[in-house]
Image (cartoon, rainbow, N blue to C red):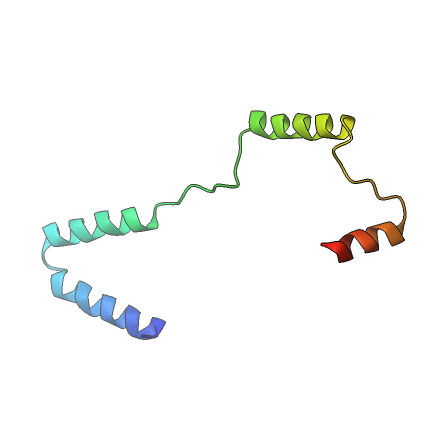
Length: 81
């Protein structure tokens, strides 16, 4: 079903219940739930961000990192992935 057909079907359904305020309220409540923003798993607090930065710096100090000094080293590293 195309987007246009789906929108037409929704419009038709809404026209059938538009005079019933209780039904419209139920639909509005349901739509609100559907459109509620989902939590973004990539978002983090300032504290979480700086904790990750601190951990990365500690890993670098322990030598748990890859050091690339020339473009050739970078090229070889990327090709190895």
